[in-house]
Image (cartoon, rainbow, N blue to C red; front, side, top):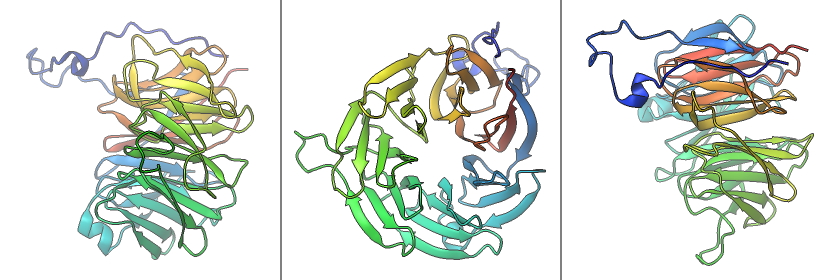
Length: 355
């Protein structure tokens, strides 16, 4: 196993409010992003505008990148060649960001949500829209998930409601939300940024957002069945490990940014210590293979890999120009690849473990 990463880095100029111009240094002090420890940088993809979401397909042969202008770029995950662009008149008219990307069980189709309130089901190779759902101009669609057999698709966003769609017909099956009474906390009261179905149950999922709660739902009911308090989620920062039945949550705040919870009881198992030298307010996080966690965010603008057993940082991507808003890993257990979206770049990395 890798030992913990140590660093002598001082707080960045961005963190202290000092700029190169203030020091009379121009751009001379700027550093290039680099990977350290268990992370190896494989490729850097340059984009026309900021990356807002990234997703590998199921067999890790394709990488999709959703941009701030709504366009989706498709790349080969073998040699990172650009393959296709997905956009249409709706996307070009709104020019609002793509917010989530989800590959369905049919490998040639991709589901995308947008800040405009649109959900689009794309045929990747011919670039055609197979179906469009308009959730309304007043709703920004910010989160989505398929269940394990793709029979249901859920979305959530700025209005605190979760909408369940039939995976085949794309018709609304259910709307899940809190009751009107403020005395009962059986749903969200603020924006929802994360949705995750349990990998082993086609009806049970969790959600999180701004209201510092994670709710547990059964999509055959209307209100949440239970909840836990704590995580302040501002991105795709909920993940479920079906082997241990643990939930990983990432919070955009200074302390207790990464936490592990027992799925069945909702009890907190542990807080993962913040890196004191390279602290991150987390926007996104995932379980990585069997033994690791990957997270990214703002403040020090880093992505880091954490050993699940020791809780030490064993790999990191640092000196990034802006916050890490999105990441995904290819779910390969031996040497998983990771895509990290930061500004107008996607960094492709490999986590190389030592036995």
